[in-house]
Length: 482
Image (cartoon, rainbow, N blue to C red; front, top):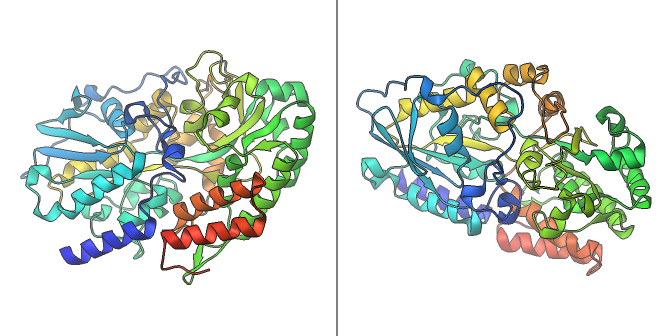
C-alpha cells in the first residue's frame, strides 16, 4: 500500500505543479506576509481586527478538556502554513492551554504546531515529505492533523493519506448544518468526505462609501447594487466613475475570481485544455475596461494594487470574502478606508467564493478521538462558532449560527461603517456551485491571468496571449493537450 500511496501523492504533486494556495500565487495567498502575520485561509494579514459586536467570546479555558481515548497518543502534531488555526484553537477550543506559539496542551496531550510558510511552496513540500514517511515514523513524530486549501484539496483527499471523517466517528447528521460547498471541496472521487472546515468564504463587492456618495449620491448597499447588478451594468458604471476620477476596481484581476467561479465547464475536458465562455467574457470585458483606463492590471497583493485601500488610491471597489476587507485591506493602518469605517458591501454582479481552510486527519494518527472532538467543537458547536464571528470577524460554516448573527442587531462591522453584511454572505454561500472544480484549477488560473496581463498591457495580441497560456500549462502538466 505504501508504494501505491507514494505513487498517488507524487503523481498529484506533478499534476498540480506543487500548487501554492487559495486561488493564486504565493503572493496572492499570503499577501507577502510571514505566517505569524497571516490569518485567513487565503493568507490575509493579521491586523488586530476590531471585534464586531459586543458579545464576549466564550473562553476556551472555561470548559474542561475532552477525555482522550484510552491508549491514544500523548503528542498531537498539527501541520499548517500560518497561525490562523493555532489562534482558532487557542481562543476557542475548550481546554486548550498555551505553552508558547508552537506548543500547547489539551489535557495530558502535548500539542505541537508545525508551521511552515507557503512561500515557494514550502508548506506542501514539507507536508508531502513528511506524509511519505508517515508509515515508518515513530508514534510521537507522525502527523496527526493537517490543513489544506480549496485549490489543492483534491491532491490530498484523493489519497489514502487522509482519513474519512466517518472513520473518526463523525456522522452526516453531525455536519448537517454546514454549507454543502465546504463538504464538496473535500469529498474524494469515491464520494468520501475527508475533511471539515470552520469557515465559509462567500464573496461580495466592497466599495468606498465616500466615492459612492460623491458619484451616485448615496452609499446605501441596495442602491449601489443597482449600479453593479450584472457585468454589463458594471461596465457602464465604470465609465461614470472614470469621468469622476476613479477606477471601478484596482485591477482586472480583482474581478477574475468572480468570473472563474461561474463557469459551466472544467479547465480540462478529456485531457484537453478548455477555456470556458465565462472566462473569455472576463477577457473581453477586462480588455475594454483596461483600454478605457477604467481599471488597472496590477498583480494582486502588489503595492500598486494596494493603493486603493487609501482614499488617494482613487479606487471604488474590491471583490472578496470577509477576510479580505477585515484583514487584508490595511484596516489596522491609520488613514486607510477600512480604518475609517469607509467600506460597505453589496452583492456585485455574480456570487463567488475565495479561499477556505480545511482540517484533515492524517492516516496513521494515534489521536483519533481528540481530532474528532477538535473537528466537532470548531466546525459544529454553534456557540463556539458564534464566538469566532464576534472575536475574529470570520464567516463560519454553520447555517443556524450565521442566520442568527445576520439578524443580530448588536453585530456590525466597524470597517463597513456599522453595516451587518452577514445576510448577503448567507445568501451568496447558498448559491455556490463547485461541480466544475478540478485538480488543474490553480495552475490554469495562474497561467491564464499571467498570459492575459500581456494582452491587456498591449505586449501581445489575444492569439499570442492564448498561445503563451497553452504552452505554460502544457509545460506544467505534460499530460494535457490543447
